[in-house]
Structures are given as C-alpha cells and as structure tokens.
Image (cartoon, rainbow, N blue to C red):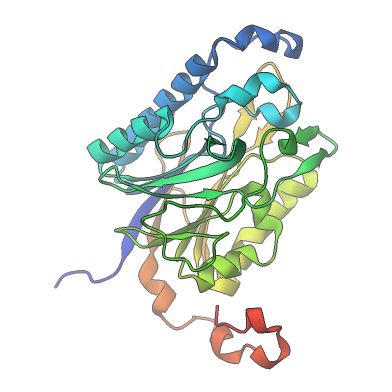
Length: 320
C-alpha cells in the first residue's frame, strides 16, 4: 500500500560569511569596496555547496539565512555596502541559484539584498525558486529594526526600506494579501517572514489565513532577550496557527566585527519541535509531515471552530 502522507524533508542553513579575506579591523573595511562581487560569489558558492550536502541527505526544500550573500553589515552605517544590492529576479545570485535548483531539483528560499531599479529603492528580500529553477516570486521584509541591545547595534533602516507590498511579479503567489505572499510549490504552500517580522502578532496568522503550511523565518539575531524569545515564539505560533515553522539564524562570529550570533536554528510544528537529522554542522534538517495539518489536534482543541469572531474587528473575522 502506498504512503499517502505528505512528507517533506526540509533544511535551514546555519553559517556565517564565507568570504575568507576579511580585514582585521572595522576601520579597514573600506579596502573591500572593489571586492563586493567576490564576497557575493564566495557566499553563493558556499551555499550551493550546502545545497548539494543537503540534497545528499534527501532534502527537498532549503532556506538560506537572511542576507546570505554578505556579512551582516548593518552593525554599522557604511555606504560601501549599498552596491551589493541586486535585482531579485534577474541578478547574479538568483540566476546562479536557479541553475543549481534545477540541477538538484530543490526548492530554494534565498534571502538577498534587493535593488529595485525602477523605484531606486533597496529591500531585504527573500526570493523563492522552484525545483525546476523557475522564479516563483519574492517577499520583501515588512518590518525594519534599528536600535541596539547589550551586545551591539543594528542599523537596517540605513540600508533598505520596509516592504511596500509590491512583491510582483510572482507567478507562484496565491495570497490575496499584498504584503505577505504565499507560494504554491510542488511540496506545499510556503510563506516567508524575515527576522524582525516574527515579533508582530499578525504576521504568522496572516500567512496561515492565506494558506501557508510551512513558514520560513530567515534571521540574523543576537542579544539576551532575542535569544530567549527565539525559543518560544515559533512553537507558540506553530501551535496556534497550525503551521510548520523553520527559523534560521547565523551561528558564530564574522570578522572584523566581534558580534556573536547564537544560531539555534530549528523546525517546529503544531505538535512540537522536530529532530535535527543533519549530518553537516551548517545545516539543520527535519522531516515534516504536512498531513498532520489536516488531522484532529491531539490536544482535543479546535481553535478555528471555537474562535470568537464576534469579538474581533472585521478584518480579523476569518478562520486561521
């Protein structure tokens, strides 16, 4: 008898900047201004190698880390990094990843630094590529943080703006919400929220209402409160909104900065954390059974049935 369950093997990358010739001090970063393409290439090549390692473990869909083509430059404000932004659909990163996705027959979520040449604006954007190498669409990070904590500062608003809902063209998008697309793939319906987006209580329920079964949250995050919340936000959202969530974070330190990233990437579903099956230190791999999303909740709860729609504002009176 054939197995009718919808099983998906998914992966997250957990790594840091792969470009090895970084200077020793922040003051020397200007020496890299003519080597941005080399930085991008080193990181794209590194992640394609991780794709191959993941595929060897049976992975079907992989999500890279936030702004994976470069070190996390938003620790300061330096216009040197602005030229790293590229076209989300036709730029070098998407073209190279499309070829790799087609070769390996993998779905790829690739969060990169986007330049919208028509608008003259930059965004923190996750590109979604199908297993035939086809461009399915993109998600522009909706909430942009700036500030600092006990470990360091972050100045993302210097480099890119908030997602404006203009995520088109997106041939794979099935969402009716312009800010939060959901992509129909051969494996299931995939949504994306990026790092800071995860803290806002309407993001995951919005993706769930639009049909998302698996939500990826590529992130770069650090600090005591962030680390504490990292371990509780995803399980709560997964249980409340009946989705699988994969949260990825960088792990380690990127020269010349001294900022540590705590890693702790993981997958969680409505019924709890999933085991990491990875045989590679820079990958987190888990088996997701999407069939469970349509089965009765083992707790006996039925949150969609018992939701008090009469107490909610009109835009929220939809089942999650």
